[in-house]
Image (tube, rainbow, N blue to C red; front, side):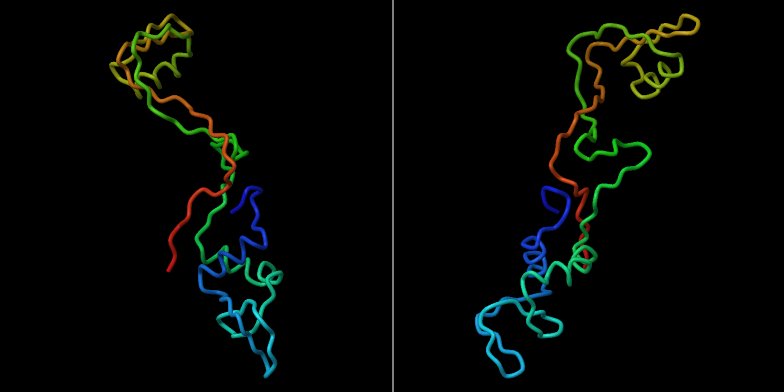
Length: 154
């Protein structure tokens, strides 16, 4: 995928060539006439214009290359450029206490165990993250890519 989330004609040509859908020949012939240099569709042996590669082969390219587009889900930021990734950081000193609901505080305790201390006070709880704790925090990704993964295909 390219910068805007769609294939360009050039991108389609390059992927079609790399996957063996088309090949470049310097001296093409078709029906006993010489066509000059250009692209040949490997399956049919027919000449194909560079401009036609996108319209004719883009669907197969998407299926065969294993490229998967980032799709929004119920738990992620719908804009791929604003998706979060968690990264682990170690605390070098005790962090200031934060007030949370008792349920959220229990979530901290379940995730970080002895690295946090919970002080409950009725409807609120105070969470203290101790020195040396390893916690996960979001790291914003301002990416230009819309591709989540490339899955190998045969």
